[in-house]
Length: 514
Image (cartoon, rainbow, N blue to C red; front, side, top):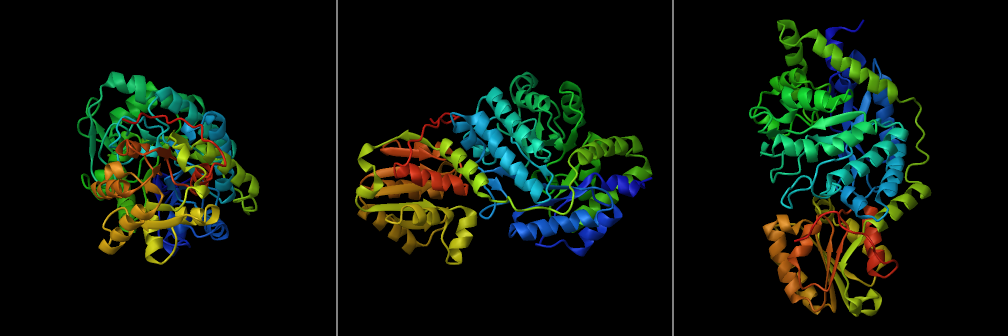
C-alpha cells in the first residue's frame, strides 16, 4: 500500500539540468517521491546518451514513470539535428494533404520518442490563432479555423498514441487571444463563455473523441469564468469545463509552475496546493530543486492539516496510473530507427508540403542563373549562440549544402555590431538578388527596422519568412515571398529546394496576412 508521500509524489513531474540524472532525482524516483520527469534540450546530446539517461530513470523508479518532453515539431522541439525533426503545426496545416501528412509525421515522432524511452509528449497545440501579435502561439498553432485545428490535432493524437506515446492537448482553454507571453507575465482574456464553448473548446472536443490521454492548462485568467485564478488554479475551469462540460476523464496537467505568469503571483508551495485543489492530476515543476521540494512539502502539509483531502489525491493517482499502464516503457531500448532514412523521407515530404509561395518573380528563377545571389538572415537565438562560437546557422548550412553559389551573412535578431550591419547593407546593395530571411520581424522593432533598410538597398528582393508568416505584410514590394512557418531542418532544406526550382510549392497558409 503506497504511503501518502508516495501518492503525492505521483502528482509531481520535475526537470533537472545535465546529460545524466542527478543523484537526488534517482533517489526521489527510488522512493516514489515523484511520478516522472520532464526533459529539455539541456538533457539531450545524441540518441545513445538520451536512451541511456531515460533507461537510468526507468530503472531507478519504484513504480512505472512518465518521461515527458515538448516535441511539438517546428519551433518547440527539444530533439533536433541527429533526430528526425518535424515541421511545426502551421507548416503541417499549410499542406494540401495536411491530415494525412500530420498523422504520418506524428507516427514518426511517436516511434522515435518511444524508442528513446519517452512516453509523454506535450503536443498537440490546439490554440486558435486570433492575434498576429501573440508572442507565444504563432506557428505552433494549426491556424485560425477551430474545426481544422481539431481535425489536424486529432491526426497528431492518433499518430503519437498508436506508437505508445501519450499526447497532451494544450493550452486549455485557449492561449491564442492574447499578446502576453505567460512565461513572462500573467495574461487575462475577456472572451465570453459562449465564444469559448463555440470556438476554443471545439478542438478539445475533437481530440477527446480521438482518445487523447491528457490536457494541459494555461496560466491565463479567463475573466468570464474566474476573475481570480488562472486556468491552472481554477476549479471552475478544470472541474466545470474539462470534467463536466467536456466529460474528459484523462489526466489534466499544469504548464510549468515556474513560469512567471504564475510563479510571480502565488507562493512556491502554495501553487502546488492550489493546483491540486483545483483538480490538477499532474503538477509540472521544470527547473529548480528548491521549488520542487517546496511543492512536496506544501502538498503533504495540506494533507496533514485536512485542507487537501485524500480523495482528491486518490482520484489523481487513479487517472495517472491508468495512463502509465497504457504507455508503460519496457527496457532495453532499441534506437536503431532514430533518424532512419525512412523517417527522414517522411519529414522531407511533410516539409515540402508546408512551403507556401505567396508571390513569385519569375525573373529570379532559377537562382543559379540570376547573377550574384546573397542571403541575409536574422538568426534564431539558438543559432546566435552557434554563431558566437564560430559556427554556421542551420540555414547557412542548408545553403552551403544545396546552393553553395549563394553568399550568406547571418545577423542576430537584435543588437548587431555596427560593422556587421554595414557589411550587410553593402552586400544587399551589391547582390543582383537579395534573399532576406526574417524570423518574426513583425514582433521586433529592431529586426523590422533593419530588415526594411536591407530591403530598400536590394536590386531584386526575395523575402523568406521562417517563423510567423505575418512578416510577409512588411514587404509589399517584394517580387517573391515565401513562408515556411517554422525553421526545422527539413523546412530549411525544402525551401532552398523550392528557391532553386526543384519543386513548385502549392501550400496555402491557414491564417490571413494583412
